[in-house]
Length: 141
Image (cartoon, rainbow, N blue to C red; front, top):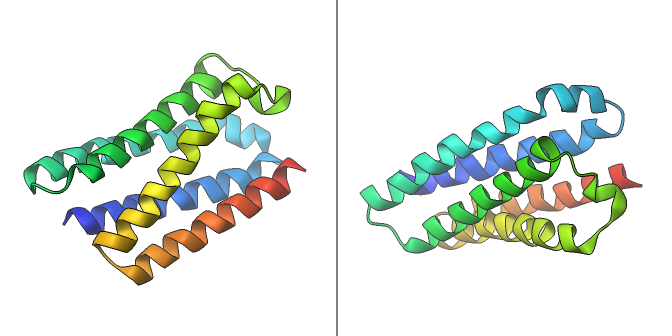
């Protein structure tokens, strides 16, 4: 059950981020009003940590889910609580932990799915991650 749930969480996460990247350039007002919905993914992530314990799965899932929750926390802190324009200022002290958590979170979804559940589904998450990167680059230019 955990592997399917973990894959679904990765799929929803990637889809959300692609959507956010696509709308942020021309519809920033929508993102500012409804972007908080992305943080609701913390609920299934916490539930997945309980599934890891219940199903006695490898602690790697807990580690990557923790990284995902840390990414959500830093995203919330920077964008919603402190409202720091860290993307505009390109301050490496703020960007480094953000980008490291972003990359690690995506790595965790791709690799854990690929290695412990299904190579084709891991490839799907990899393709979605590549799409995330492309939409992120295109909408930042």
